[in-house]
Image (tube, rainbow, N blue to C red; front, side, top):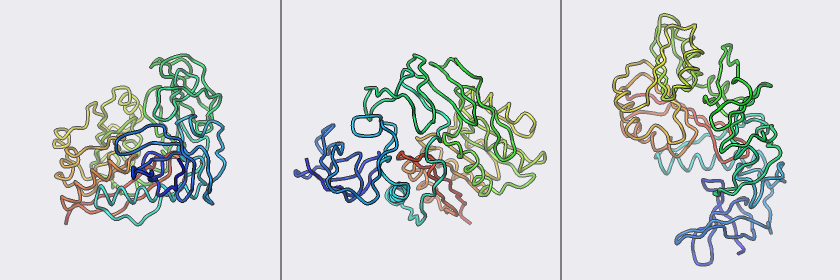
Length: 368
């Protein structure tokens, strides 16, 4: 069908209307374009489609740099056909919309670019070691080289083959078993970190420095203060916050993954005032918490309503919330806003160029 494409939507698509009135989510299109679209799935209320021919291109359309980006090909990227400035505009629109619609919060910021735009992934999961899945499909697109990770196909056969690569280092883990390398050793803001195979590390090469700098700025932790770092991963924020509060202060890092906690303990071994606890973040755990500052960096699902309510009830002097999903952040933010908290700062960073994703860092302050 021939469609005139409207605004961008979550999921890496744009919105159009079919002749029968149903919404069509069109991938590989840009706002304002007229395209010939091929339906890829059909429901009673909406359709999904690929723009297989662009009849009236937008001024911000570019040729995708990757030969595997396009209709019916690799599903790893969403916006390679958009110029860098258009990607930022699209993401700003989506963040603003989700914060307003889900969280009831009006944001007047803009998503900030972070270099590099290619070759930025520190980790990638290769299906069977030879390619990536197509969009919303178990079908496999064979890939020789990924421009986002800057790595060739590992060629190791397994259900999931994970490659970690940064600063000239490379680790290959096949179905949870290390096959090559022994993790990554990295430096962020003057502190050293070791990430074993399978341990979480920020996905963009610049993300640890960008996010840690902003977290430290917003937390403004002082010597002698107490800090709790929830969803602490391998201890990136905990270690740097530990340096800020010093031996007269305290940091408690809470992380559910035992493997990540082992890394976190190693990364903070020279800071005895930093304690690592292996447990899931639950409302009960939060209620037992006492701190001047709380930092949280949950997975894409967010902290959740119950954990957010427990955090809001604690009323530390500041909560620094790092989120990789604007929709779940907006949901959690509403809990704080309803409890009288305020948003003192909210910045968005494009730490996932060419994809739909974005990272938020916010400072939430309790009611006076």
